[in-house]
Image (cartoon, rainbow over all chains, first blue to last red; front, top):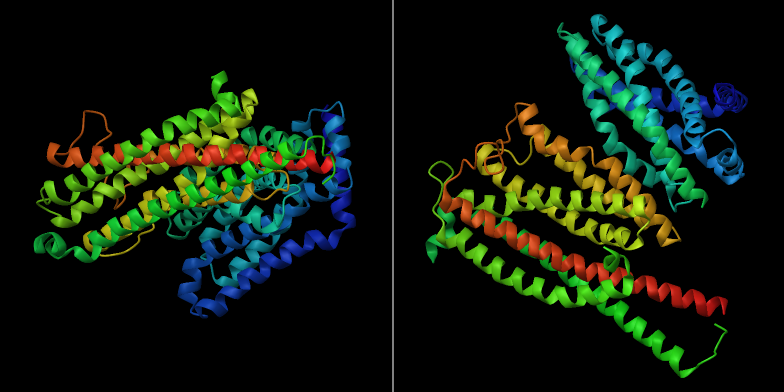
Length: 222
Length: 59
Length: 239
């Protein structure tokens, strides 16, 4: 079962690498969204440093959202998803493998780009490890929750906008705790409780997410 | 009566709150009743057509 | 239970009970408005502005109550495959969305004189705003498919996922120290509110509940009839 799951994750990686431009797009969007803020709120360094955690986190959220529509849609369109659902491997495991691959392909580039953007926005040096830690611990929750939404809107009209409406409200807790941790680090306070909460959110999402996503996919295939 | 309308200086806040409640709840009620009436009429029409043309198969 | 799963019997039940709910709504709403606006005393701190509470608090209760009903109906629909439960959830969503909207608007109108601001980003207000978006998402998802059954089933899953927000709203005032006052009616140790103010609050809550049942039955009946219309049209089209 593990080998089969790994094979599916491997397939996702190869697909993502061969369509390299697609995965790059999310990062380009992430960078662009962050770069918009100095123009929007003005180049005042104190203001930018204060809101830098929020900017980076909101942009990461939107970049994840942007990358979600490919998670199941292409496989749904060409019938691969139907084959995967009929395979001996439980659909929940298939979903878990796909989501894990999606997370690595989107969160990896975000984690590389985030320190550079934090540097540009003048985030306090003390907060850099916290920013990376929150992104590493929080983005799994984003991928897992996003997968539920992506599966629910399979075959819907205007799926992209609908996905944003369904998923963004559910992302708010992750955003709150992620930004709170970076803010705490910037003010020299303890970060640990926020990180624990984020990790807890990701773990809870990882438990609830794949079975729910699998149920939503079965619904779409019926 | 004047006291009631004046609401101790809070009329600006109290009356819009009650008005909004009645407007929204009333609006939803009217919309629901109209949707129900429309569906009832449509179903009655379809039933009537079905009974007057027994054995009809085409569109 | 099985009677409720049968669409035709459910239509008859809805037709029977809706008028009673209508009468109950009108009577309790009239009594509630009289108690709230005329018969109850002004608060010694908040003055007459406290009257906003008599619509704000019941609306907020109904926002949570409707979502709980929607989630429960969705669970029933998904576990026992009962399509009428899906329709009940679908009929509840717009009513819950309206109550959530009213809780936000009346809260804002109460917040301006009491806190000096229309809106604060505190835990209670934010989580209720999220609830409003969840309702909108449910409604959008349930109508986004060409096949309505597919839409309401997908929306049922969403309703269950979104249910995590309900306890967060209920306990947000206890978990975080915020501007919004903590619960004073439904709490351990009995209500911390005078009887002269509790009476209009409870009567309004009963009125809103009757209104919910009334409109829900109307919408449920409408949904079932719409399903029948679709079935007849499909049958005619395919001969």
